[in-house]
Length: 138
Ligand code: GCU
Image (tube, rainbow, N blue to C red; front, side, top):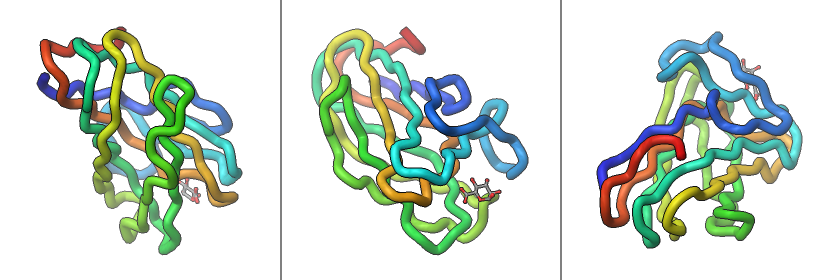
């Protein structure tokens, strides 16, 4: 199914804030994770059918230190320590892609910082794949 974009500023945020002070984001801003282990952004996404889907995270990391995130799907660890390397500047946005299994219907994709630096600045999550026609936020 065609990709559907979920803006981070519309997601559920635990220990993070929506900001718009670094240009280049889509939508109305991005999430600045608090610089602590355990801060997270949780996207509620819809899958028309169960199965493998590609997740594309758009982010910026103006430091030179990787800020890995654990990716859980409906409470289960799907990707351990997905890397978000430095992008050179907080205004330079890049994408990281991974693949997960989604259930049919609504899914909770949580992206949790695993270091004391917190996560990268998170612009959006795009979800693609699976059969049928995906729709927007369920
Ligand atoms: C800077 C930057 C923030 C970023 C933060 C961080 O303060 O302006 O956008 O989130 O560094 O290191 O996490």
